[in-house]
Length: 203
Image 1: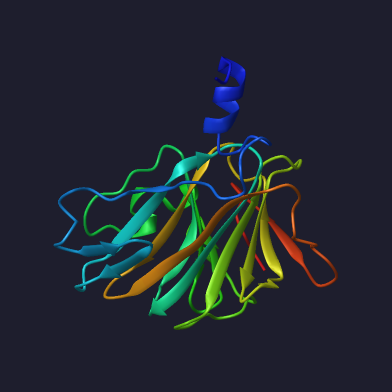
Image 2: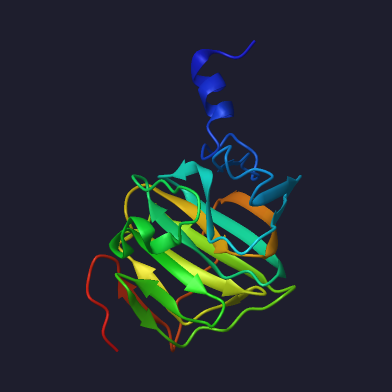
């Protein structure tokens, strides 16, 4: 039998004692299920033209986490939202405030506080898009990858607790990984540029 400390470590997805894979759940209001969103295992299909933003638990507030999705059809954006954000039916990620999210859209733009920064790779059907969150670094960082290639624009000083989100209408995507990492894979090498969360982004 595990003692209480060992049991807590086993149940904590960000504990070093836990396996790499993190169990996840979605925040999809019951009113959206079947009307707007069809879920089959790790595949999500948005079956009409309503805007739909889906948040993912657990709340990420420590460790290094990699969230990987594949666009099956026309995925619009991926990103993170502050822990206070909740969405209702027919809402875009910006609906609860552009200053509470960071998005990466299919055209290669990253967005915060309604400002777009160009320069990252576009993504399309069958592409894999990754969010890597390093909550242990100072400052905390969010780095993007497309088909395992690190993108030049990344975000620093992200909130202490966030959730991943996916957004689109009439699209489909599959969650491939929600993993805890022992070390970051992001390098932030030559040509990379950091954009600070909470500030006004100007190129």
